[in-house]
Length: 152
Image 1 (tube, rainbow, N blue to C red):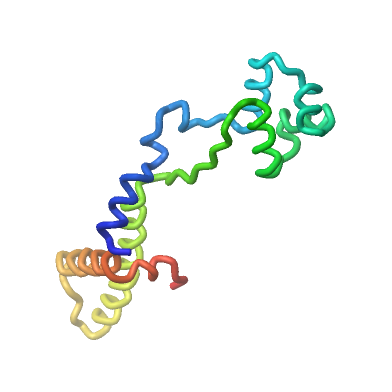
Image 2 (cartoon, helix red, strand yellow; image 1 turned 30 degrees about the vertical axis):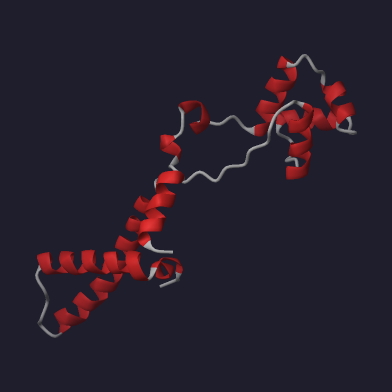
């Protein structure tokens, strides 16, 4: 996938900071279940019956004492007349994340090169080092993003 495509994806999958505030601080599912069930005027016993479960199970679910499976959450959503949406929302824009990661890798690689050059009394200038880091960062982003995920 080329860098232009990654930039398009980054615009499509905005970071959490770009979401409406009510989505940024999303309520835990157990709180949502309790609020929606109550708003519908449904008791825990009634929801449990619709789920073919026990009232105590719904109670524990609403308290957050149990972590329901995706299948159970789907059933709960259906009974509460809701859609279950699971979203992967980047913590920061994808392209920014990639640039930061590439910069870190490029900096590490160039530092090793600079260290060996210094041993030979040929240390490059700070400006040259910055240029080399930027150039390597861009090369990583354009040609070899898989290096970002290797253990160095």
